[in-house]
Image 1 (cartoon, one colour):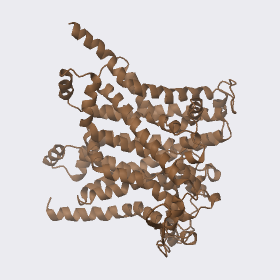
Image 2 (image 1 turned 180 degrees about the horizontal axis):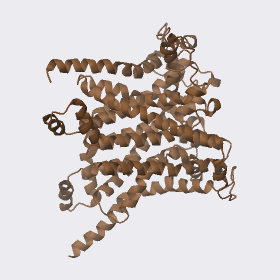
Image 3 (image 1 turned 180 degrees about the vertical axis):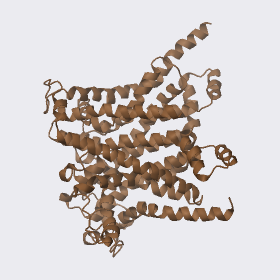
Image 4 (image 1 turned 30 degrees about the vertical axis):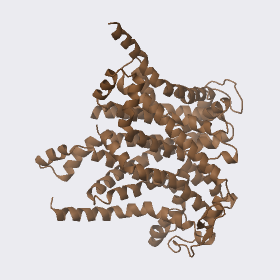
Length: 294
Length: 289
């Protein structure tokens, strides 16, 4: 009996022993900066300022056109990349499964290359190869059609789609890899059962593959949302830290960065904090979807 | 399905995949070829001057091999202290990956294998961690890192990166799949819980490796936090050095830029190529279940 008691009392603190290192760093580098950010957002702008100003920054943001633009751009950019990447990655994964088994690893790996490349390099390659007057997009597609070469980084109508295109180029292969791994984990029995029910190829996809892949697709979407709202490097190199012409490519992190440059720490933090409810909403809707489909 | 039908389908998929593979691969080929180009060649329309006119090799002073002129210039540190920068990036990314794997594996083990009060709340917090991009809180993080006395130190970039919600969730899932019998066997032998954990680790090494690789790649790409924390030139990381090389006001030859870009891609690519297979099978095991 005594041994059992000892065991339970030991069992009570062991999990925390395992959690301790994580919790320590979590507190140190996540909770403290977060609280610091919230505090900063209630203080006056400027270096070393600690004057309490209440919700003044938030009120100012509500009527700040650039803030609204940045938010809208980030939202459009994120949704745009999800809407393109998820179906494209599904399709590519499907094609990779249909093609020669021997070539599959090489091709998957080739598709992954952009995801392995630092975003700043990616931005430059993308700029040179696809964009610009001499870029392939203009040279091979736009100009042969007899149109004026598109100035992707200056024309406000094209800046955001340029950023989306860059993200598609960057992440599609990576997501294809995830989906492919997920597809290969689906037990064969399910397909055999579907075949017995003389299901068509499309029905296989719709009734077996897709439901089984839900968790993967959800993960992909959440990842893209978070990445979309934290995009910095790519836009920074392409647009030099500005929002581009008429702020058409102004994203939230870029805006935070701009505010920081002028030591408007209060405003910068208020922007960051204001995004928290949005992120939480994304999380809960993802969890909700998962629960409903599980 | 007949053998022939399969071949036709294979060929058709290959045909459809072709353009995508090209779209991914051509820019990288162009990058590597760019090392040999002069500035004038470099800015020609791609369709006209994709390949360089000459491939020139030159003996490097520090290395016993012949390298393209621009690579030699880069390695000799004419534009940025390349070896320092490369070493910093490597140290930060390796340290961060190792730290993240250790912390997340331990936390994941606790979440997967124990019931304790507050577990649900802590787990939700770990999930929330994924959703709040660190980039958004760089300013308070930066001032806090300063207060800790870690400004302009590699540790100031490395340590904040070891906390990862994704890792915790991943390892929780991984340790859930370890059969209970293994743990019981170790416990019966009277092993302390930490000992049990260490015995299980070899069982899940593909997962440890996979997550380590992913985290290494993310750390290798990090731009904003190093930019704020690291100020002296020899403490910079690769993304910072690259941004500097790309800056038009520096007038760095395009060939040198492309050489640096190529070097920035090599470590992550090699690492991934080596672990590719392990990585995928460990993902397949986990994702669907």
